[in-house]
Image 1 (cartoon, rainbow, N blue to C red):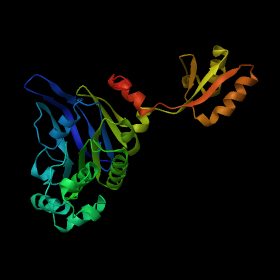
Image 2 (cartoon, helix red, strand yellow):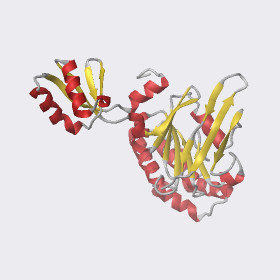
Image 3 (cartoon, helix red, strand yellow):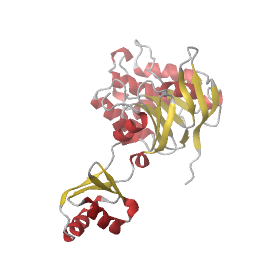
Image 4 (cartoon, rainbow, N blue to C red):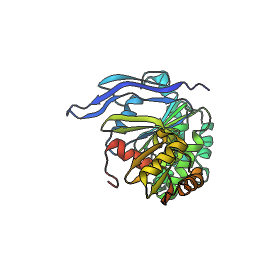
Length: 302
């Protein structure tokens, strides 16, 4: 199936008056119907990029097309729902009353209010004042507000920020559900586990530059097997014969083998049969975390 893109940027750049280059020549493309994770450490340029896409700020140079339109144009905004930074609602109005106000401003039908409350599972608490809501409920009401126009594209900036583990799990499930079918979700995050669980593709941004864009699976790379043997040269020779030289590489005293871990029994049998002692044999898969730190140069645990 051919995916048309719903967000395209070309050399999108934002330099602030202070000389800070917040976003540096970003070329990104988000396909229709996918959940796209915009991943990067805090301060990498994620929010600035999203604000340019919805027309809140103007780029210094470069171009962007969002839902077929220039950012911020009324025709484009009619097809976009966004939650950038924290949702601003009236604390003394109930969740439902707040959404009615937003629906009026957005030109959405009032009957849509109950539909979106249902989608974010807030119907039972819609009569309570927004000021009494937990952070998770506030975020979900923000998503409900963004869904009022039944948008083609939903842009969410760090939607799990400030949530407890339960709230994060609920928000992940909500995003997965929303991202079914033709609707596209573009979400920014600095949380690797979140992106790994819910996104189809990711763009990694660091220091204002887009350093990678691919599926999560491509980013992590293929699964493999790590082998530690007493005669490493002999083992490498046997494994090259079994799987081809291209599948065999060496690193930190291990032989890295690009093959499915289900072949472990055959590998062990061949090596032992040839008189090579195997001291370690285990599956290997890079985590998104390793890839991320490699791409961004961030220190692990920072």
